[in-house]
Length: 232
Image (cartoon, rainbow, N blue to C red; front, side, top):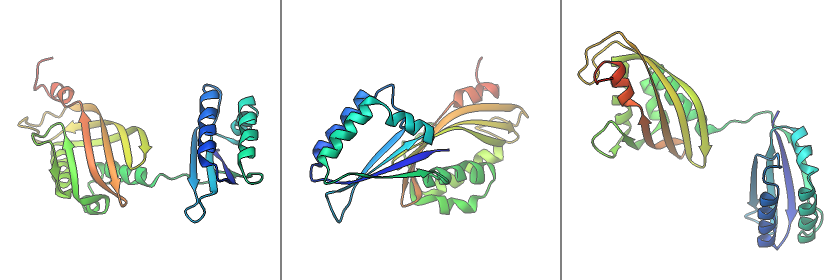
């Protein structure tokens, strides 16, 4: 079970605390068990800082706290603070990346499931699409996705396996494997009945909870080979 520790303190010496955190990151390289650290400053009180540190488990957090570098940095941090920092230990009982969930809706519900009505819920009206198969660098509008999904679904009976998703800021990157049976015309190729696979990467950028921009990179040449459209 993931474990999160919240460290709450007050200090006017934020820059010094920030440098101290940089030292800890450098000195514990290859030894620390913390996987994610976030520091926030109270908008109503600039001296109020909160750090949120994530660990794979409580046990891993305890290993981290026993590192000599952690102990030394903590003592130096206390000296910079107005009083002793407080700690809150939390077992994570729900961890949901909302943009990641929305991204999955596209692959499973819209593309594979064919629920085109959900496009307007998931994509911004002025969505910008970048696709290696298209001559224009950028196409704008949620109807771009509607047309693409309809075309692929007419040509193939397919599914997506989401191999890995990485979330950072407003971006969600998805590494996927597509498996489809060729059942309709595709780029001038008559149905072959062949089952094909293709790998690719899609990056969705979000704004206000909807997909604002998308970049598509996939092995279209490998797919065409499997359909017999190019030389082996």
